Length: 382
Ligand SMILES: [Zn+2]
Ligand SMILES: [Zn+2]
Ligand SMILES: [Zn+2]
Image (cartoon, rainbow, N blue to C red):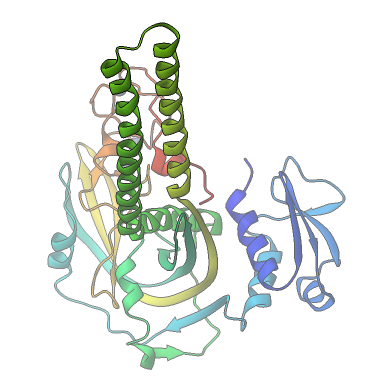
């Protein structure tokens, strides 16, 4: 599978650093300035491949664990595109964790007990996406998205906090050992959330365009309606027949065609084209309280870790293992105890209990292929 989001991440970083980047399906062709080439340890003219089966001797293969990615973050450090903030000395809740958990999440099909608690260093990527919606008018904005790089949860509430807790910033380079998920996965979640947030941000914009479109269409219908009525009443009043009547009727048909053309013109004028691109990224590292639960579903058990976040002062909502959406009602599947949202715990066709993490494509009960979910399968690009 081609690593699409990684490729766009690299492309955006290089372009912002003033490099020339040409993209074709399986690779990027880059022309780097001398200092960028030295920082990255690359030739000034270079092909970058992102898919192991398409790699070729004339370039290098880039994956999310390539050292070149490390170099790229060095390259943009200090330019504001990618920088790190480490927060330390945050107060971590000791008591009342049970209440904190039951306030945020429920376990409708399992029972659990608190097994242990500890401290963990986790990191978050904060992506700032710029969007512009272009139509008869234009609207632009910035959407910040935060993703926990360890659990893939998206505690957007944190975005309010870093500034107010600036007293805690530490300049240390040391970030502790963080078992991060691949950048590709983190970016996929960020894009998914950004798409939803852009949609929300554009609700009023869209509504006002629809209102104007409907108003313009009504005006057209009234105007051309009157013209049609005039022809119609000429036929009736004058009692037209034969060729004369045919002439008026063909006029009416022409008016209809013209009306349809004008409506289409207005629809095109008010259609919205949305562009979203990554502007900056920031890595935030902080200590969190980890709470390990022992979860029991029928005869099976598993450990399930929740994080209490000192900036949110709340438990971070976990994500569904099948669709990666945030969940408050956590279901566990029978076979492997996957953590699931309600939708991914049920077949949308036969409504029987099915785990969409165990069975991604075909329902094991009704044997029909699952319909594609537009929110999660529309590709990773925005
Ligand atoms: Zn789900
Ligand atoms: Zn089914
Ligand atoms: Zn499962």
